[in-house]
Structure formats: structure tokens, C-alpha cells
Length: 232
Image (cartoon, rainbow, N blue to C red; front, side):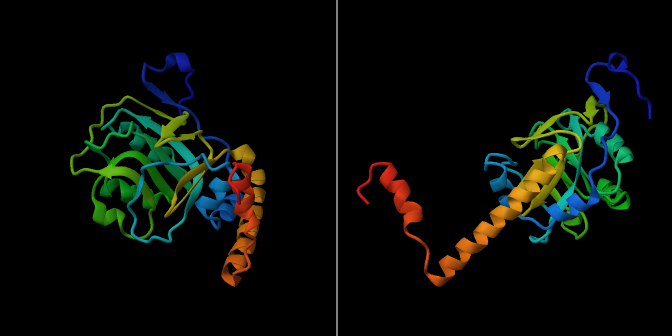
């Protein structure tokens, strides 16, 4: 592709190269972990807010490398270009400004996503052709839906930092989504977050067993209440 320097791009347009690929073993490892547990391992303040799952199967897990797109609300020119750049296993993360007055993707683009083996889509905007998106094979999370279609005029940017439903995403981040929501893990932090998430799940397993057996230690919460001045 054309690798023109930034000064050569007209205002509002930018297409950066795809980032280095994430180790597939890390993608596979995170695909087995709940988003809620990953979020707990990342301080419980990271993840999307207000997106809806439009694929039908609640148990579907989406995991893949972020191909980011920023578009003018209601315009999908750069989404079409991003699909031409997408590699198998990519997740399109689309910053549409939260606008839901016009759909950014529909059933025809879903067919392209399936053909190019995209791992899923995360859209801070609207979609249409809901019956097609509900079929198995292409996870999608979006702000809303509308029957009105998009323009194809631009501007837009590809592989730039984006903000999607309260989640900051950098090109090349690992995106994981499930019924609870969507989260982004920086590529450089994947090994440490993986270790912390597994440790957190092991801790939860111990707590679940004490809850099941009725042997949970009351001091777990009583100590917090006493520290706040309650006479417990």
C-alpha cells in the first residue's frame, strides 16, 4: 500500500500500516478467559460501556487483534478500505462517534467479514440487517441499529488510536469480547495480564467453593466494615 508521509494526507484522512502480529498462542489463551476476569485483572476500570451484542449465541467469545477505524458519523468509506486491509483474526474496532442515526455496516459487509476471516467487529455506532448478523460466525458488538444506510464520502482514518464506548484502543491491541462486554489489552502487557487473570480465576474458584460449602470467612467483609468505623 501507499506509505505516504503524514504531511501528504489530506485533512481528516490517514491510513497507517497494520501493526506487528500478536502471537497466536496468546490470542488462543485469552479466548478461553471471561472478559469480567480480564477486567478484574486490569483494575476493574477498563472496558466498553453501552454496547450491545447483536450475534445470537450468548456464549460466543470474540478474540483478535485490533484493526482500528475512525469514521465520520454515518459514513463507512474507511470501513470498506479497512476490510481490504484486514488479516484473518483481526477485530475491526470502529469509532463512529456513538451516532446511531445511520448504520455503518450491514449484511453485505458481513459477507465480506466472513470471507476475510475477520474475528469480529466492535462499533461505537449503528448496524443494520440484524437477522443476518444474528447468524453464527461473526461476533459483533454495537451501540445500536438503524435501517438507514451510510454515506461513502469520508473522511476517516485507519490504524490510529480510537475511543469506542469508553474504551481506548490502540492499533494492535488484543480485543476480547463476550456476553459481559468488550475489553482491550495492550500487546506489550499480554503476558502479565494473562498471568494475573489466571491467578484471579484461581482465587475465585476457592471463593466459590467456600460459598458452596457455606464455610466463607465472615472476616472478609467484617474487617472492611470495622475499618470504616462500624461496631462489627
